[in-house]
Image 1 (cartoon, protein in one colour):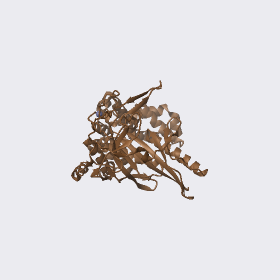
Image 2 (image 1 turned 90 degrees about the horizontal axis):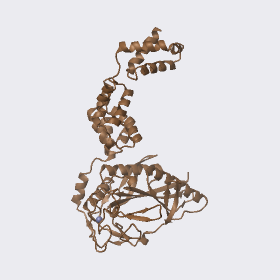
Image 3 (image 1 turned 45 degrees about the vertical axis):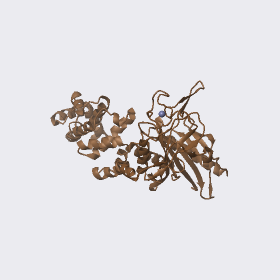
Image 4 (image 1 turned 120 degrees about the vertical axis):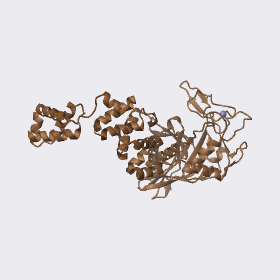
Amino acid sequence: MPYKTLIGLEIHVELATKTKMFCSCANEFGKDANTLCCPVCLGLPGALPVVNKSALEYAIRAGLAFNCNIATHSMMDRKNYFYPDLVKGFQITQSDIPLCSGGYIEVDSKNGPKKVGLIRIHIEEDTGKSIHTDRGDSLLDYNRSGVPLIEIVTRPDMNTKEEAQDFLEKLKSTLQYIEVSDCKMEEGSLRCDINLNVIDEERGLKTNITEIKNLNSFSAVGKAIEYEEKRHIALLEEGKNTTRETRRWNEVENKTVVMRTKEVAADYRYNTEPDIAPIVIEESWIEEIRRNLPELPHHKKARFIREYGIPEYDAGVLTQSKDLSFFFEETVKFAKDPKQVSNWIMGDVLYRLNEEGIDIKDLRFSPKDLADLLELINEGKISNNIGKKVLKDMFETGKKPEDIVKGKGLVQISDEGELKGIVNKVLDENQKSVMDYKNGKDKALGFIIGQVMKATKGKANPQLVNKLVLEALKEK
Ligand SMILES: [Zn+2]
């Protein structure tokens, strides 16, 4: 294929600091409109901004986690534009000298691991929020005005939607590990814009870059890339080019629509923010932040493989979120077989979490409870299948596995004498299946075993049932 797609991303991340970027108003989501504001974040005349040191620290933490250079001298600038939710008529951001520059995030590509370069990470303030009502009114909520943000800008190093989505997954999980942001896309604390164009390598042509905004999920990012890729290629094939413009993703119609033709940097008339002194950061502070960085996801993944002997795939899934990796490690402390723990977490636990839409932090049972459940299976007190039912009960009630097993009489039947009686009864009642088996129909065996399990409400020891049925059939 002669076409090559170039994808760059711009990601805005709200920092989880206690207070806003330039004032002491609380940085919280979901409070009543306009209850978290003061003269500074409302942009009243004469109010002066003061830089939040925690916001700087969080941004440096992100920069270090993504291998960036941290500027010891940087400054804040004004980006001038009018918008109703931008009370001051300008946004305080960083233009020429960002706090962090360079760096990379490694993603998985078809040809193995690949480094996606970062151009910069700068700090800035968020705007307020416009709410458009059904009656045609526009309401303004300034609670978000002045919330600290970092903007992460990548090089156009991604070539497929899969690479872009993997990049976002890695970015999000790292930011959550280092506790810089909760990265909740649905609450707007992680927002992503795409820059995309296509090169016709055979004819040496390329389309103008389109910027796509308003992506509210990683799957929407994938769909928007796919849509734009096709649109750019179709124009190239007609001998046309794209207009340099900003489009937005329409989730309902599954397509991008034009928002505006693209402003260029000069339209914003950037100028130095006169109310904030240059930002000077001591090397020793950077080193202190570096020393205190927690274990990052890719390091933890490597350690899980090494320490617990689990496959790379398992380690990847278990370290995707910090809370999940914590749950795994805590369970392993009480369990004998890390791979068994991994299987149960990746299987039934994740399945139920997804199904019920709950977070692992909100589970009603502890890692020790899961380890106890596995121990009941390993001791032969309950079968694997009964174990799954007990786990479901643990999800719903938070009861201890042993109490559930006792309370519901689920203890496995491993008594040979008792089981033999049941097996003989089942064989007597299913003469046809016995004949079928004798005539070489192996499927009949499965049916007979199934009937025995049913007769014991799934409580029979499956290995023992297998053995006893085979023995009994021989005698028939
Ligand atoms: Zn304020």
